[in-house]
Amino acid sequence: MSNRGNFSSKLGFILAAAGSAVGLGNIWRFPYLAGTNGGAGFLFIYLICVLMLCFPVMVGEIAIGRNAGSDAFGSYKKLGGGNWGYLGLYGILAGVLILSYYNVVAGWAFGYFLEISFGNLLDHQDFGSFFGDYVNDIGPLFFFSLGFMVITAVIVAQGIAKGIEAANKIMMPGLYIILIGLIIYSLTLPHAMDGVRFYLVPDFSEIHSKTIFYALCQAFFSLSLGMGCLITYGSYVTKDQNIVKSAVIISMADTSVAFLAGLMVFPLVFSLGAEPGQGPKLIFVILTQAFQSMGPFVGRIVGGSFFLLICFAALTSTISLLEVPAAYFVDQKKLPRKAVVWGVSGLIFVLGIPTMYSQGLVPFLNKLPFHNSPDFLSFVADLCDIMLVSGGCIMCLFIRSKWRVGSLNNELAIGNPGYVGSFVQGYINFAISWFCPVVLGILSILVIVDKYYGLEWLFG
Image 1: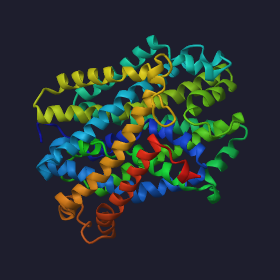
Image 2 (image 1 turned 90 degrees about the vertical axis):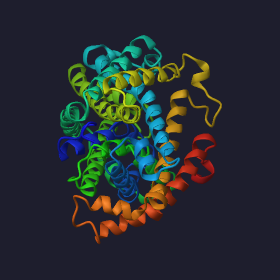
Image 3 (image 1 turned 180 degrees about the horizontal axis):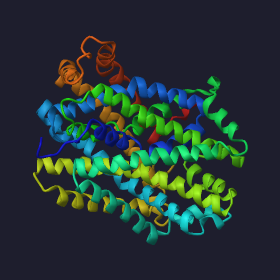
């Protein structure tokens, strides 16, 4: 394990794992899902999902990684034997697919940061048309996404302590500083309190089956569960680390960023007089209008800071997503880290090229023959959602039927002398054995049906 490297401190692991969880799902996806699903009602259900469903799964993944001391494939194979290693490969594949499209969207955000801060983006009058033209201007976007991948690879190639841990120690505090600064400014805008009320005062009549479904999906996606990230990071954790306590802090950090993102976004939206239920275009179209309304100087500062925030959040996630397949080749194939990182990052970048061309340039990639005719980016994202939820379900079944809950308890008791016999132990045992696999199993089926056939019959 010493040859693989470890996190140099408890704080280093927590910041890295929190950085893995914090990403575009918090800053981009959470606000638009909250906006289209009732605001405060969605937030309320989301928080319950994180506590009851996601926390036990996170604890299980970290414990598996630390006990086995290997990548996702090696961990499942060591603890389960037989064909269980393929569950690790399933998670690794999910991480690769996510990074292939995630890097493209991160390139969009990086380009918007440059265009707002140093270009003339805010001079446009139709931001919807601008965004459509922007995502089809492949020349600049190719280099924006390539640059993002190169930065990610440079950090991961440096190893655990000097690369991943060191980068997150800078970016995570920086992310919070920018986020809090933007919240303070947004709360000073006209009608900002209308946005706060929409976001924080729940109307329970607005909570429907659709709200619960999307809150469950978002909570699981947001915390980077089911794809081997936390198993891989857990393998670099020393035995004196309290896994349960660390998982609590990581969950709180991720949830706080999502919560604060909503507290920043909705005052901006309501100050513009726009509807909150704008879907994915909320960030790139609606908020850009809000930045324009602030005037040329303030708009550049606030808008540039916002998209820099998104870049920071995306980078903390792309780092962890690249580490998952890199750890596999380092551990299982005994290849040198730097060569593996650059080779894998190059392959993933190439896999992302169809996503770049899926926003209109190639008709087939822009309209696939599935429910609602998604573009290729949406298709890959939907597939990954399915893989994450089903991967989390099978992970619980692995602990219950193969590794056993007793082995999980033994690992969690290391570094946590008060764990055995506690209420937390009782809940984790119940959740891993029964609650989580049942809920995630049902959710997996519903996600598949939703992505390819639709759930209108359920949502009404």
